[in-house]
Length: 81
Image 1 (cartoon, rainbow, N blue to C red):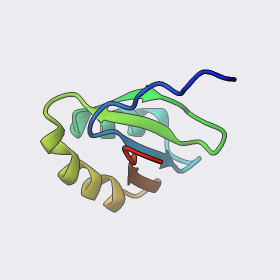
Image 2 (tube, rainbow, N blue to C red; image 1 turned 180 degrees about the vertical axis):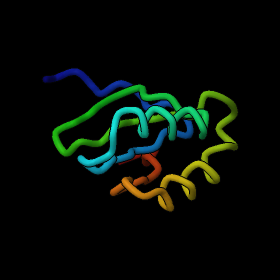
Image 3 (cartoon, rainbow, N blue to C red; image 1 turned 90 degrees about the vertical axis):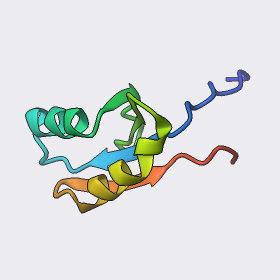
Image 4 (cartoon, rainbow, N blue to C red; image 1 turned 120 degrees about the horizontal axis):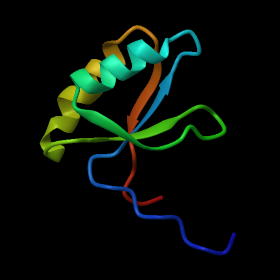
């Protein structure tokens, strides 16, 4: 409990898929956006995802996630609390 949390990679996003989203749809979405899960789900169902390629791909991926049916929340991870 006294350990500091691990640093979050550059370009990390918190994503909460809807409970009705299938695993196949979730995997397909991540693959199409070149994202990979690096953490989660946490207590509220959020996953931490990062781009597989350059962090410059974060903005378009974030827009696509927000527009995708079945995604309840998609937000960049703040670098500082």
